[in-house]
Image (cartoon, rainbow, N blue to C red; front, side, top):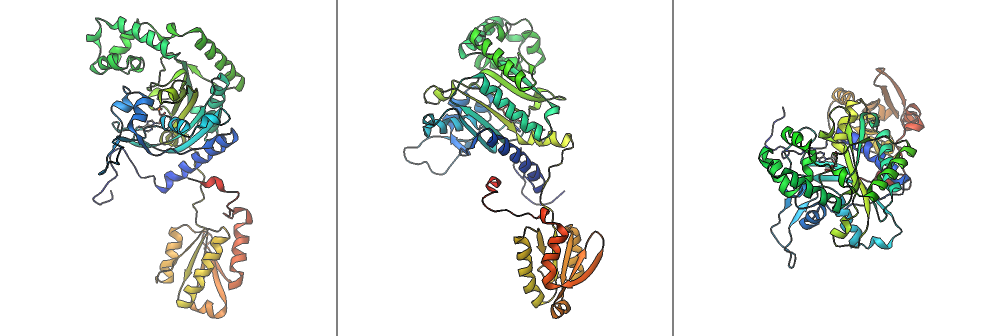
Length: 446
Ligand code: AMP
């Protein structure tokens, strides 16, 4: 175990280089599939006024009631006595942005995606962290089941690209309108009159504040009581039912598979009609890999004109876990091609330029520019797993040569110094060079 005084805060972790290989791979798949489907990137701030989340997500949801990280500052700007909170998810912030920037004026639907960290002060456990990373897709401005179907299809493609689609089952439900749920909740409350004492304490509170949450309660006592309780589907209006049937037809047409789950409600207040989650086939709903749904009332709840929307968020850490379980290796470009070793002031100067030239050609190059012996520089080259080493000592400088060593074969040869770069390019192959121009690699944004 490493020493030192400081540790990352509970529930957070450093995204180390090997984790970035996976994150970069996921981001690439997300960007690629999003661009193909006309989505544009947006990055709302990492913190917002707390009221954006309170109004957007719902005051009596776990996320807002218990899990918000409040942001404290030593100063309060004049006229700005607001509280701020770190974003627990993207949707509320993106919808705030849609209203703030008048995106209603743009051709609809507005398709936006985002990738970045989110924060929830939950009890940390496997798959549940206080800082985690989401990618998020939102389709705002139109109410049509074909949009829900298309969104789900884009997500399916991302999971297929990442080779975890077969490990997941999409759970699908229709939770109707806010009025449907209000009627259902009233009936549920009626049903529980006189039965409250049999509910675990947490669920007794939920019955008061957010009775829908009882449906996905993990408590056995609650589950038993729910068996005879009224069910949500008895309260769904005909239009929502029709919407759901149409969505399923579209999903079938696209070959998207799903499992109907009448108990899926999702934890947030803003959803209506379509809700869906991706569960891994072994552990079910405990560590959903992603989830989303339709949120037609949200933009109005945030103070905008009534504007429908549908969205999805996937959790990167849980996706990475699934990829590792499936034995998926994230391809990466972090390998070292060339290690340059040198001895003597003249050689060192020449190597500085040589290293720069190699790098410019797209060759991943490291140099030992300290004053270590050649032997220890060679050991370093080995540790960095360089494919080839170029060695320039005082003798070689005088002779106008350089030594080229094939590290795997353990063989070396002396070549003309000016031949070093073209020889390396030939050995590595033009195709493997890591080159880019700013034009064609704009996608490398973080
Ligand atoms: P939600 O909208 O709460 O269902 O979140 C969407 C996705 O984000 C989930 O399916 C998870 O993959 C991920 N997620 C949510 N909360 C956490 C957390 N505390 N730690 C890790 N991933 C999370």
